[in-house]
Length: 330
Image 1 (tube, helix red, strand yellow):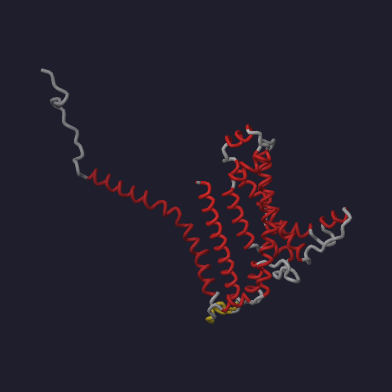
Image 2 (spheres, rainbow, N blue to C red):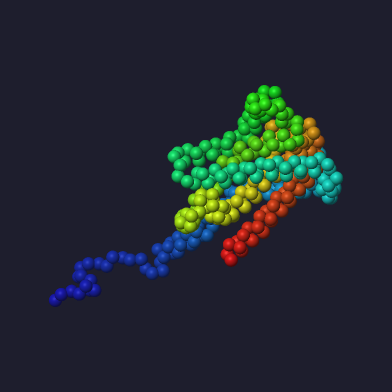
C-alpha cells in the first residue's frame, strides 16, 4: 500500500503552525500600521526643520517688522512702542531721501542687470559649443560668485580710486583725465554696478548654459539645413527656447538689485552712500534710519515697502509667465 502525498507518514508529527488570527498576524498588522504611518508622515518630518527655521528667522521677523512699522520705536528702547498707524508709511511719501534711494536703486539695478544678463547669454552661447577645456571655463565662471562681497568690493574700490586706481591709470595712458568715481552720481553708480556685474555674470551664465543644453538638437539641425547661420540660430532658436529662463533671471536679478546693500556700503565705507547720497540704495537708507538715526519704526516701514515692491515684481513675473505659457500652447 502506497501513501499519497496528502497523507502524513505514520510515526511523524505535524509541525506546529501559527494559527490564523493569532500572535503572528497581530504583529504583522502592527508592522503594517507602522509602515503606513512612516510612509505618510516621514516626508513632513524631513521638511519640518526648514519650516521651523523659516518660522523663527523668516516669518516671525517679517510679522514683527510689520507690527513695528505701525509704531514709533527707538533703538534705545525697542520694547517701548507708541502707536503711529500708517504715519511711518505716509512720511516716506514726503521724504526726499527715500525717493532718492529708490531712484538710485532703480538706476543701479538697470545698469547692473541689463549688461550682466546680456553678457551671460553671450558667454553661455559660446560655452554651449564644444570647446577645449570647457569644464575649466565653467569653473572659472563660478569663481566671482564664490568670492566674498567684502573682498570683491574692497578690490573694486581700489581699482576705482581717484589718485592711484588702476582704471584711472589706464584712462591716463589713453589720454583721458582722471575720474572721481566715488563722488560723481553716474560714475559712482557705474562703479557699484560693475561690482554686481562681475559677481553675478558667471552665475547667470551657468543657468543659461543649463537651459541651452536642454534645447533639442533637432531644432539646430533643421535650422542649419535651412541655411541659418550661428547668429540666426541664436536669435530664432536659442532665444525663443530660453524665454522662461530669461524671465526667471530678470526677476531674480531685479530682486537682488532691490535688496542691494553690501556693495554700496563697502564701496564708500558709509551708510549715506556718498556725500550727496548719490549711490545710497533702499537697503542703505533702511540701515541708516534704523541703526544710525535709531528710528526702528521708520526702518520697519522701509523694509515693508521693499517687501511690497518685491510682491509687485513677483506678480508681474507671474502674469508674464502665464502669458508666455498661453502663447507657447497656441
